[in-house]
Image 1 (tube, one colour):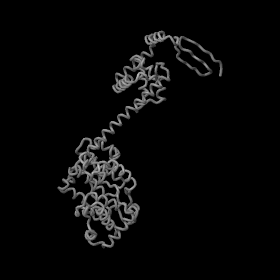
Image 2 (image 1 turned 90 degrees about the vertical axis):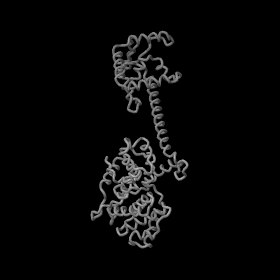
Image 3 (image 1 turned 135 degrees about the vertical axis):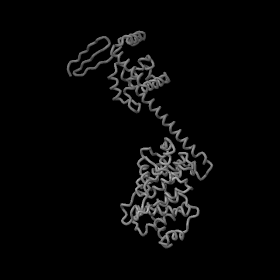
Image 4 (image 1 turned 90 degrees about the horizontal axis):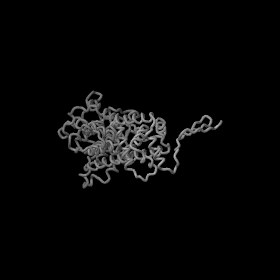
Length: 440
């Protein structure tokens, strides 16, 4: 390794061993002499070297010029003041004067990342740039304490925000607390299940697997079903479930165009039996198709479809998410914003391309577009947390809805399919279809 020599100069001892040079700061006063140590400390502060003084003044100038840094310094100083004096790891920090403490905090802030925590690598870099010679173990203990306090602050902020959001969501259910149909006690668990279930049960795009039917035929079928739904005065949930059953069945079965209407009217019959108090009879379904199919054909298709679904048709559709999001946003069922969101969501049912998005996302985008013209912040913190979708996530879907609102689908003979538009142009729905088209 080579010769080892030792040179002593004042309070600095330099050890040379081969190519390595180790420099360590030593205290020239006896360990037990408290007064001598205190005197040396004062002398060291009074006779600080020019480089150290200039760097300290520079950091002070930076702190004054940067309000965020100054705010962070004040925050850490407050942490130190409120810390238990029995904390032996910070005993040396308590003994520093205000200038030294500020210099130490500035050095730690220099090493902080965007998450307000200090990594070992950035800390060592900051220590090398600093003119102070605090023991590395002390600095490491101090930064670990800073990291712990930062994590606690973030945790408290998240908890407060979560509690605030939960309180706002609970507030929207307060009026229905005595309504057994609103199941307020289970509503959170219920929608948590819906979000999980739609990942499995929501139909995907399927027309590329069909040999005889096209997206335009699907649009014609659903346009006709909207008219039938309106004529029979059915509840909104029935229409959404009907379309879901059609898409789910067609996703796994090759359907001929001559039987597509049969699948549609049978899906409506099944949805009515599930959602309605007084569902239409089979003969009504035969009549509404202008006797294109017999009673036996409808019953046979009903059996085939139910066997395909294994008699389990309890699925989350866009309607469940739509009414919940509107309620969280404080919209009543009979106001224009609610009708407008329903218009956008029902118009989306006609388009095969919208199967690219999950029902909850289409519902979220519809609510966002409905409130965009009324509120400065149509997608706030509460609905973002509750729905699980950020504004960036719903924007592509919302933009697609805007496109379809501007352009109605057409038949091969170029006849426009306007059943949804005409429905929402009536006074019953406050003529929301006549409002200016949404724009993003």
